[in-house]
Image (cartoon, rainbow, N blue to C red; front, side):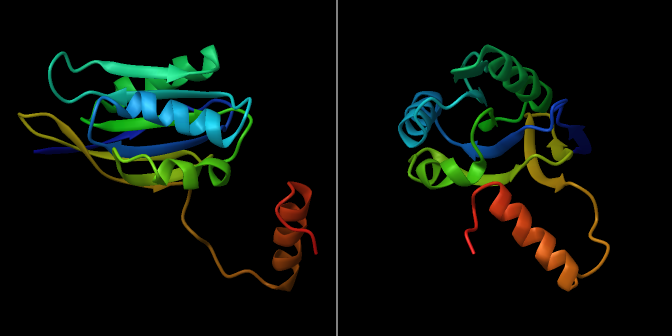
Length: 161
């Protein structure tokens, strides 16, 4: 078995979700969950099929996000993995709805950070072992950092006090 890292291409630092599912129906069910959770949502979804023709299956509402998802899924090429790029929503807006999709087994991450996917590759295929999300932590926040964090949350509408 070989271990490798695959960097996610995300030139605009968009929010995305990387996960694992178990059925080709994932593409349709995720699409429905997203458009029901956030009316007018812009997204691109790609799913790596792991049997049969083993294609990247895809869906979405934004052509550029769809292309970005397809490109990254093909680079990852790990069976039953999916990647979902969000245009006008945050993961926090859709994770609850996605948790209700019966085919989804797990989420590896929901981020806009630079990301590396840790891949194991054997003679059978590829699997995701985990992710490296962003950079290493460098310390503990102080009172000023707490104020800045809360100001940021107010700015983007997630805190009112």
